[in-house]
Length: 324
Image 1 (cartoon, rainbow, N blue to C red):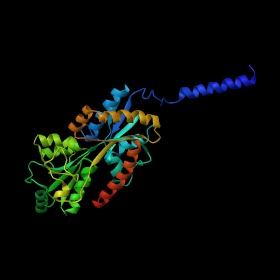
Image 2: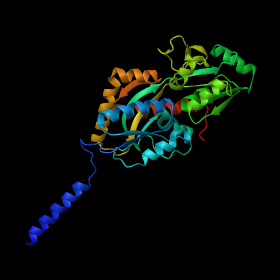
Image 3: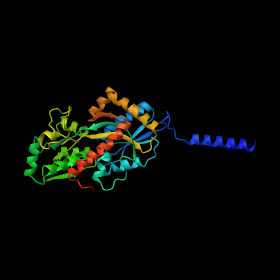
């Protein structure tokens, strides 16, 4: 074989080796199990959304989608893990405003950038929340709660298990000039358990963890956080209409990959998620789990995350919360 022939053969061999070593990012993705990391405990609203989405993706894409609950540091541990993962579509993050809207204003050191370190795939829903009290507390309304707190300074413990609850508790404390004691939990299920037991007197559960206890008569609801009443609790007033005019807070959830996730992998994930959220079965299961569906595709979700980061930063500063 002459020199030119050997050169051509070598070039072809290198091309074939490069092709064999290239990741499978085309229509055959996924070819092995995918991990969806979520930052809160089993039974939380985020966990509920992750398991519903994971099951549908598994059925649609014919590969296991494994949910991993990695709690700690307000969700930052799980977000950091995914931010540093290989951008091949096999490690995803289903998270909430806690890691991507609130953390940069709540903590001095956040080990990731919520905008540049992630690839937005889809916004899938929102988590309404409400102010609740233990059945032992002798109050039936927000006005009575405020009066009780003023008459019993330092005796009202208010628990929260996520950034929504923390902002709400601190805003109530600051705006209404109340001497209440904020109590932090790693996740909402633990906070609701203590609320039912009377270890804390006030909490801000999301619908996923709070509605079942409300319906069972184990906690007493006082107000929702959104400016409009929620269809799931149409008789429950809002904070805006009771003691805090203008207050309006709604947590969100969505799914991300690490920065640099190939567009065709994003599309392979976003399409079945959109289809799932359009099905009545999934919509019913989301509603039963306390999650409201809000579909937004990759481009729209990227813009939404930027807007929400500004909004939550403003709310945190207004509540007087200093970064830890």
